[in-house]
Structure formats: structure tokens, C-alpha cells
Length: 168
Picture 1: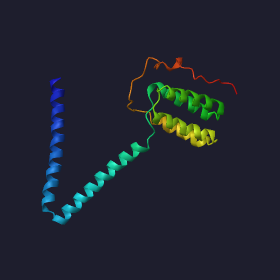
Picture 2: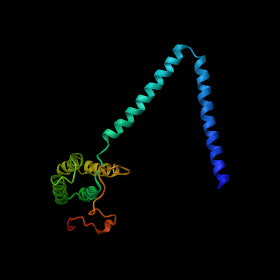
Picture 3: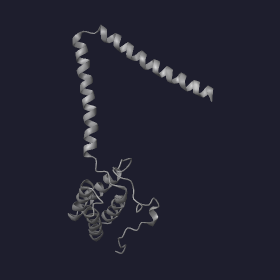
Picture 4: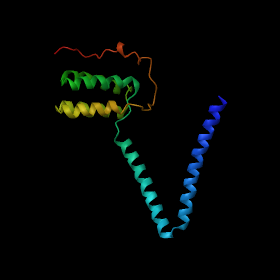
């Protein structure tokens, strides 16, 4: 145990030493540059920093809303309805989503996400609705939610019925 701890500390020390060496080397080269060259490097660094920050902010801004645990099942239900091109099922999901929203169990952001997809399916834009369902489901991975799951939300998802009739 002591040996692995010492080795880990040693490798961290080497990594720290390398970072320090790169930094000191950069600083010494910076001192040899003209003011104009230093100013160009500073401007480039600022542009790079703002660009990366802007890209990250933009990606978060266009990302669909985080859906609360108790409402995740509606993504699956809507995906099923859309992939089956079934207007009746879409209407059933819409009614359930509206009820959740009316009972304050769904945020306005969540409700908007569902309504966008429902509107696409109502206009028979099934391909776009399908892609929107996928993006909404994908956006739920590793998301923080404002509240935890209630006792209604089970992690044994086999006991959830979709509430949709499966006849054609």
C-alpha cells in the first residue's frame, strides 16, 4: 500500500514538474518576444477562450430541457406513438402531458418540448417528430433535475404500462 501511494505521489510530482517546466519555458519565451507579439498572443488567447465559452453556452442553450424523473415515461410513450405514426396515441400522450402540466407536475420548459413534438406529429411531419423525440431522449442523459423522483417513479420500469392501447 505504501509503495503504490509513493508511486502515485511520484507520478503526480512528475506531471506537476512537467506542467511547471512548460509554463516556465513559455514565460521565458514570452519575455524574449516584442510587445506586439505578446499582444497578438494575448488577443489570440482571449478569442480562443471566448470562442470555446460561447460554443459551450450555445450548445447548452439549444439543448432540450431536462425532463423530471416522473415525466420521463412520456418521452417513451411519445416516441412509441410517433414511430408508429399513430395520431390516437399522440393525442393520448398529449392529454397526459397536459394533465401533468395543469397539475404543476411538469414545468413550462418540459411542456414546451413535448408540445413541439406533438405539433410536428399533428402536421404529419413524422420524420421530424421522430428526430425530435430522439433528441429529447438523448438530452436526458446525465442531466441534473430540479427535484428527485417521487414514490410513483419506479426504477423497475416493467411495472409501468404505457396507457396506450396496442391494437391497429
